[in-house]
Image 1 (cartoon, rainbow, N blue to C red):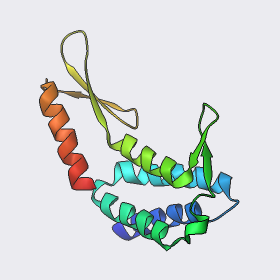
Image 2 (cartoon, rainbow, N blue to C red):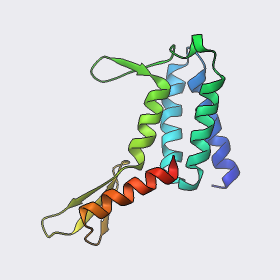
Image 3 (cartoon, rainbow, N blue to C red):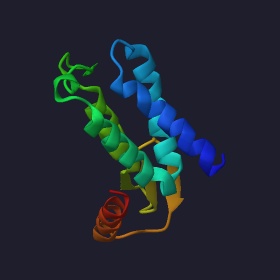
Amino acid sequence: LTDITVLKLSSLGIFPFFVENVSTLQLSSLKLVRTIFSQYEKHRDLILEDIFASLARLPTTKRNLRNFRLSNGQSIQMVTALILQLVQCMVIINNQDANGVSMETKGTGSKKDKSQVAPDVAVISSYELALRTG
């Protein structure tokens, strides 16, 4: 997709988080924004800026109204669920198979063969990626 299309889709996906009584649309938007965020790294900063700018524009009385129900029955704010899922889709977990070959698992669940990487290097790389993104 072109940059303009990606940015328009992400803005379209972020908008429902700041509207009341559209929980089904918010869940679909959550998936859309998470997918865009995980696949288009160079747009992550702009997506986060759009989320936080929209959150800042909300009147303080309306910031706690939109809830996302967790599997344990508790609720959190829909925007919190969005931010948590965006962070989770960026995380890379390094696992080794029985032969000592490293398998890289992204937050989206995909696995890729990688050469052996020291655990401390993987942690530092993930930390540096998180710093560059946010």
